[in-house]
Image 1 (cartoon, rainbow, N blue to C red):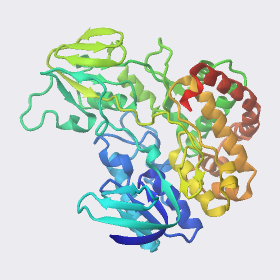
Image 2 (cartoon, rainbow, N blue to C red; image 1 turned 135 degrees about the vertical axis):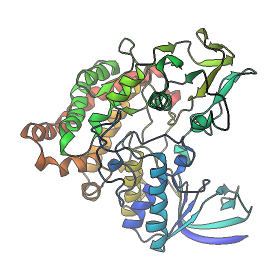
Image 3 (cartoon, helix red, strand yellow; image 1 turned 90 degrees about the horizontal axis):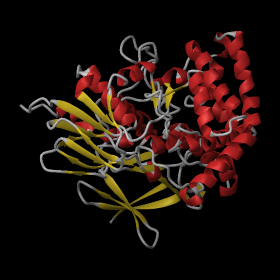
Image 4 (tube, rainbow, N blue to C red; image 1 turned 180 degrees about the vertical axis):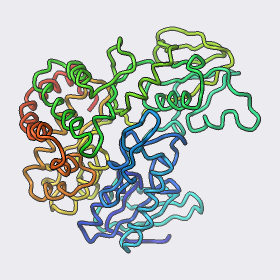
Length: 480
């Protein structure tokens, strides 16, 4: 068996692993080895549907060391007036450039794509090439960095949880653009199955492709709260939105008696959206969307409320809360994959194993970058874990106070440590750093509101602790 030596063995070359390694590369002298199952760096972007884009502006995604995009403002479409959203192809290209122009040329990074990591019963690390079958043993001098916790479930790879009868036409978003190629008959009707951001992307894409809204049905078991993209924009032009978004979260978090009050308050101030104004959403996974996209999606009037689908037959849908007819010759689009499941959390540093976790929701790359810096800059597991307390992702609105609390407490921890504060001051991925960078170009009112965020956050902590405890009691400790 071939053998190689490395300081850090990183399993997974997606945004999480690459961001962690990016910080290690800048703040240590370590050698890093990536083992990844995909043919290119970028993780789940390798299997994303072809019309997917970032939820957030390109300028706010990727690695600290490399800009993404050119700060272009979209001049048409539902994202008009906002900073560009990189396509899935552009994101893949970005991460591939990072690997081949930054990581590998450093002389301190080895990269093994199309390979499966293995851990023997005796604790030995190895990987097997999916193409050649060749096995390589890895002698890890320092630590294993296991990024598999954040492996996303995407439509192309997830296992559906409903049955289909003979004669049903079913596809996934990734295959949707090919649905009528090769002489296939154009579908008479489309049925979107799923309530998450993927389903929304499919709806927007179909409408933008000229499909009549009357020819689309949408199975939406639950309604979702959506972050208004206007509140997440970089730059001075939208500073009032981004500052107001942070401040209003903390203002209402200090007084709200439940999570629904927080979301309704943020909706009132323009920071949260929902597709159906008459229905109080019961899910929240941090999707970001524009008002233009919401307006498009509201054109789809045939919304089917039968709970989670269990069986699809030609012309008939069966769900947990009933059945619903649909046109017999419909094309069903499975959008039921959950990209960010709510998983249990463990300490990030566990001896010779590092399991990067979410430190600032929903900013996975920033979280991994901070963890990489802490690994390179501090000595013991105890001091590292004390500076980076991971959190669970949200599923329902009731989980949101827990995330706001965790975000705030990690920020307060970092603000009291000179090393971490110094790192964040120049961190491209940090929204706070971007906000500080434009303060000289904004109005006095925006500067005043920005100066209030820290005090408002501290004032909200006590009530957020109460709301989090109430949510934990209601949903049970079994989630942890």
